[in-house]
Amino acid sequence: MKKIVLPIGLLFAFGLGLLTMSFIDSPKQEKSKEEKPIKLGIFSLSLSVKDLAKSKEFYESLGFSKMGGDMASNYLIMKNENTIIGIFQGMFEGNMLTFNPGWDVNAKNVKKFDDIRFIQKHLKSKNITLTMEADEKTTGPASVMLTDPDGNVILLDQHR
Image (tube, rainbow, N blue to C red):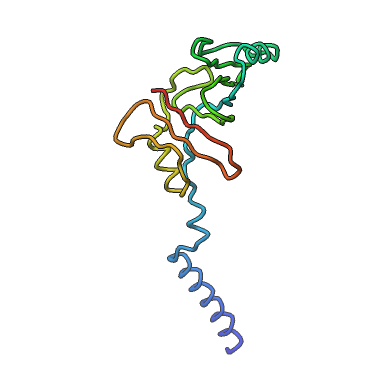
């Protein structure tokens, strides 16, 4: 009889342990809840150039064609398949990673997108320092700017 009590006692203790653990949230369970990723919109590289005409000619030789902007405004948006670059003369220093919430690869409006103010709140919740902020009391076009840990400037530029 004593030989049977020990295994039954172990099974009871094991079962009780499993039952108890099902009522307690472990840290692993909390981390498994995935956050919905934010939608940054279409990506492009914004290049600061010295001579817009020369840069236009150079990028055209690489297969890019104009899809927006104009020479008189000192910038062009150029595209090669799904790759987009902006070339800007005298508008800013250095190059930037640029995202356009609400646009597709053809600068056409998409139905569902994350508003720049929503993205801004998300970034702030992650303790990311913003160098330029959108006014959260407004709607429509706005921009947010930040810098990654290596000094790369990132522009989030919503046009609608």
